[in-house]
Image 1 (spheres, rainbow, N blue to C red):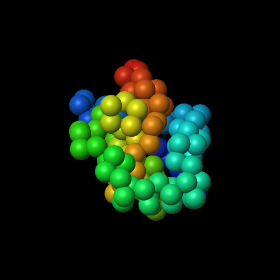
Image 2: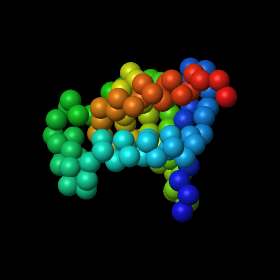
Image 3: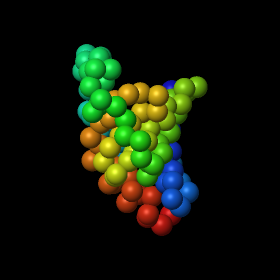
Image 4: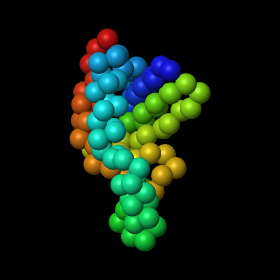
Length: 108
């Protein structure tokens, strides 16, 4: 199954589809940040208990769509380094957001 990663910037509506190298780099960083099933489970439990783990209510800078076959997962990047999966209650520190901003500003 082919995975496609599409990035859209909110302010300018710039859009880029990542090539194979960029896509592998993004997906490996996403796996590293999100952790395994156990750490995601623990983060979900704490997100119901602690108000500080709930998503920030600010406008995101970048919208990311990861298309894997028939499923589409949407991520939002706020403040260049905060990753939030749409529909989830957990935020992640995602420093690759700075690189994604640079890829969006590059000419094609």
